[in-house]
Each structure stands twice: as structure tokens, then as C-alpha cells.
Image (cartoon, rainbow, N blue to C red):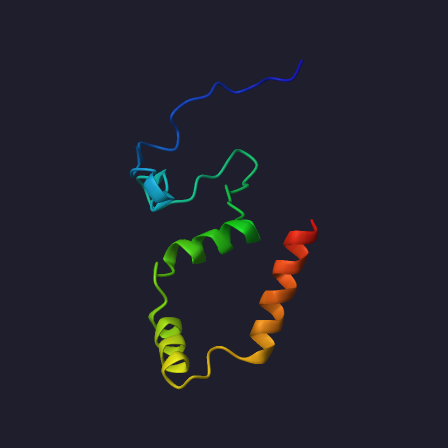
Length: 98
């Protein structure tokens, strides 16, 4: 049977932050990246989905630029167009038809 090294606190103490919104991460107190006996370093890979979720968390709740553009279009009587009405009517018909 292969020899398995015991698990110890070789990384050092961890600093953690509250998980609300996942603002923080846990990381070793030292700045050195841990290296095992074979010289391999720990690494983290972040998925594309995680990057998208982070971007969503960083977006403001209200996109003021969109609000202002829509307000301007409504004031100029350009917001309701025949194309938008057609899309809305088609959507309603699809809902009614099931």
C-alpha cells in the first residue's frame, strides 16, 4: 500500500470573509503558493459561468443609461412602434393559443 502523508495545517491559517454575495475568498495568510513534495503548486480555475455571475453581481440594479434612453424615446413618441406592437400582439396570440 502506498504511504499517505498525514493531513496537517501546512498552508497556514486561513482568513475568511462572509459568504454573502460571495465577495471574498479564503486564502492562505502567507503570500507564498503552497508546493507539494513533487513541486506542483495549487491552482484555481474559474468557470465561464462563474465569471458571468460575477459580472452580473457587479452590474447596478438599475441601468440608468437604459432608463434615460427609454424615457427619451417615450417623450419623442418613438418608443411604441408598429414593429413592437406586432411583436406584442403575436406574443399575446401565442399565449392564448397555448
